[in-house]
Image (cartoon, helix red, strand yellow):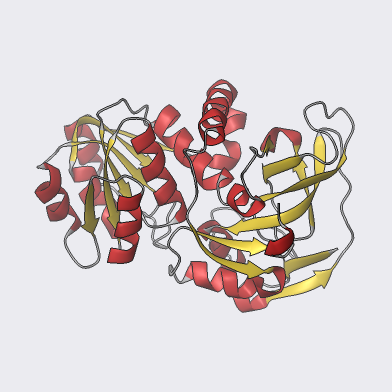
Length: 330
């Protein structure tokens, strides 16, 4: 099979398209024929050697894909050959990938593979963050940082679906308009203006019940300062490239709850809530109320260009690698 691979850490220019052996599924695993895969910001950090964990070289980047089950390993009971699935698994930028049965989900009728690949990681991460970690309630005032990216837009869309009022914070007007289209009530440009003053102008001081933060960097502390007493702050990643340091006295004075979510291990550590969230999200997704915003599509040969686009933060929504050309993707 053909696969995009990294032989040395650095920039996206290090990606090569190699021919390698098709993997075989072990027990409780599926072999998926990949039709589309989504590029996420952590993919760019991994190829640069800047992610929280390291991967042995050479490796195939990508963690989010959709396609057709080509084979099943022993003891697989939930899927059959020929079934369309979306999946979370390493090595997605390839023609085939092996995924744990527990990391796959059937693709609803009417959803394309490109849409399915763009939905699974960001939307499910956002749903876990809102439902299980932040435990939002209808009427909560929720600030979403990085609201123009794939995860941020998913958080805006899902928070609105769960009954929250959303303040979207992003780096330019195009991204803020995309967040408004997904239901954000207020919008704050945190590059062209002051984040804290923008929040206060929109909803008043110290009014936030929840902050959803996939960005980190210099915007974390001002967002935390605008939490109401007992507010919840959820850290999801550091797309800014900077892991922030938070004065703990702010947490003390506000009675704040600061929690983190790492999507790859959440189901392992909290299987009951993970299963509940997944079932609820799947039902919501099946109704057609959840649709990702796809910014750009690239063929597998242009994986390096797709990674570069995401690393530069030019994308509004998701960037997709179509392993099978779009005219054949179902």
